[in-house]
Every structure is written in C-alpha cells, then in structure tokens.
Amino acid sequence: GRPGAFVPVNCAAIPPELAEAQLFGHVRGAFTGATGPNEGLFVRADGGTLFLDELGELPLPMQAKLLRVVEDEEVWPVGATRSRKVSVRLVAATNRELVGDGFRSDLLARLSDWVLRLPPLRDRTGDAVVLLDHFLREAGRPMELDAQAREAVALYDWPGNVRQLRKLASRLRRLVPAGEPVRPTHLIPGEIQGPVQERRAAPPPEKDREPEARPPGPDARLPPLRPAQGHLEHAALHH
Image (cartoon, one colour):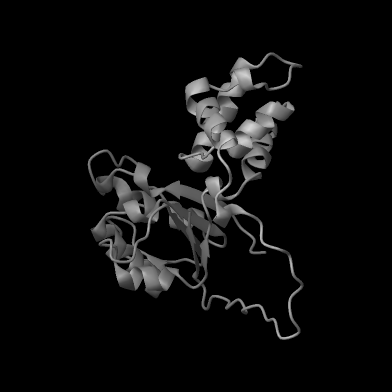
C-alpha cells in the first residue's frame, strides 16, 4: 500500500469561493481573513491519498484548476509566487453519472484510470447489517440486533445509502439502553418498518432470484487491472 496520510474532503461542503484555498492552500494576506498561511489539502495528502467525495459538486472553474494539478503534478497556493510539487493518489466518488452532465470530460478521463461502480444498498442484501454493526462498533458501543431487527435492516431500501445508515447507528446509540439488543421497536416505524413489511409480503421479482451457481469454464478469464501511471494516481468510485 501507499504510505502517507489519507485526507478525505466532501466537495459539496466546500463554499465555492473557498474551494481553491482549501484544496491548494494560500499564503498570508492572500485574501481578506487570510491571517496566516494554509498548506491546503493536496499538500497535507502529499505522499498519501486525497479522497474527493461528491466530485460532481465541484464548481466548473475548480474543475479546470484540478485538471492542471493532475497534469502538472504541482499546486499553486492562492497568492503564492511559486508552485509546489506533490505526489498524491487521487480517489474520487460521485453519486450520479457525470458523463453528459456538464462535468469536464477531460478531467473525468484523467481521473478514471480505475472505475469501480458500487451498487446502492438496496441491491446488496445483507450489507446493511454488516455496515450497521461496523458503525456501532466504530463508536465504541457495539450492540446486538435481534433477528427481526436484522431482517428489517436487510430488507429496507436505504434511499440515503450509507449516510442514512450511519445516522441510524448514531440514533440507536442514544436510544437503546446499555445491555439491551436492538429491536424493531427501536426503528422508526414510518421510515423502516412500513416499507419492510411491504417488501416482506411481496414475492421477489424474477431478476432478484439467485441464479444457479455454475463453476467457471476452462476458458474463463478475469479482466486485468491496469495500474495508474506517474506520481498522481487516480481512481473513481460511482455509488
């Protein structure tokens, strides 16, 4: 693995007027309120990984500047008179299709050395239970879910995906008394229990039925992974 820091940033949470300074840094006095220098997220991730979540929310002018960084492997802090070289692995994630959505196609091409499409939780039955267990343990308070609660979590569609699941974990930590298991009554009825009861009563669609497992044929091959080139390594996640 690559040594160095892992620096995550939510592009949707950065005010457009501050995006350049937060990503690339700034010198003292570069703008009103810049009372001291800031190295920026790229420099902080130098030698490691910078995770750009919600990449599609990055303003168009910032997309052009990000493309320059990817191509030149250097950043220009706001107000600086010289650039700084960086060696960063870029990982980007988006929850929508960026092709034809006004996103710069040249930047998208540079960031798409490896593309991993992650299906939503509704298409990964059982993953929600595993992730909920993880979020509860991550907060230092693991809990057991009884059988009915586990079934409800597994069958729910989770339109908010992992963020919604993390919020549920936070709510359960406050709601469930210590030493007690999580029960269906701890889940908000209108949010989870109602839709789950409807899914439980409906027959599974033909497309959701498990196909018959067959061993791969003698000519089966897996596509090779193509490693990223250069000092800036790129990957994109679609979820």
